[in-house]
Length: 271
Image (cartoon, rainbow, N blue to C red; front, side, top):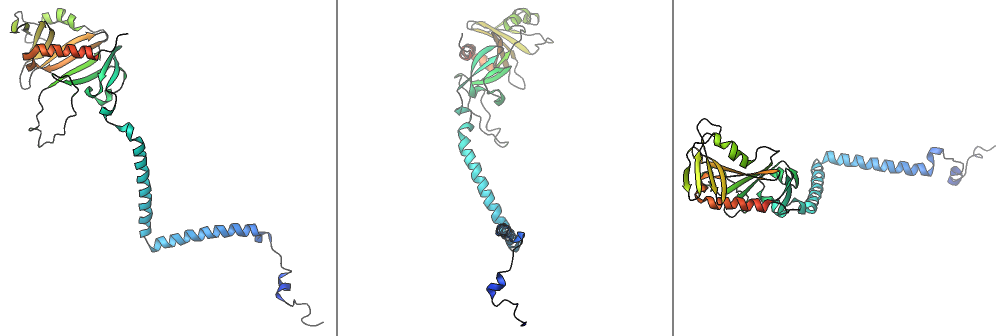
């Protein structure tokens, strides 16, 4: 036998008898190649990041830009619902003590009370004598507080459920006379004043009464702070408590008329 008789003569004959194992199938090779490519890419990015730390900043800036754009889009879409109180309803139907009132939204002093429906109490303020809702107060710093003293031009009103407590007119007839001085002092045409006795529950206060127009006001006396007056009236299940400066009694008819007008304006439609 010749020495080279059993050897293949060319490359084709060398390749022909070769066989592939199961792991060398075409499908497995494609999957492994994709995985190796992804791994190689990740390693390449990691190497580049280590070589150039500025790439971190680039990624952070891109992420921040995308986030800011998303926030701006959401803000733009929701902006119509964020308007201030002036963009809301002019009046709110509020039920206090089972009694309906139509309350001007800007006149409500507490934000938590700016909603419709049943409430235990609502606090309001109006400019006098126009009875318009007050403007939003301007910012006053500690340096300008003395220069920005606001004029007393507000009449305050609290509407609260009375829960069957003593009515204001009943208190006038049955409670106040126990603590009043006997003598009444005329103040103005139609307006009289009686002082509460010292040591009484209403010490340092005076009671002002008029009949045409009707006015009943209990007022503190001027002292370190200006005197304030309180006038109450009942409307069904709610008590309306007005507060105003005592100095306004110089124009008491205008004050009494303003309280009457507010009482009528705030009441809801009768069913």
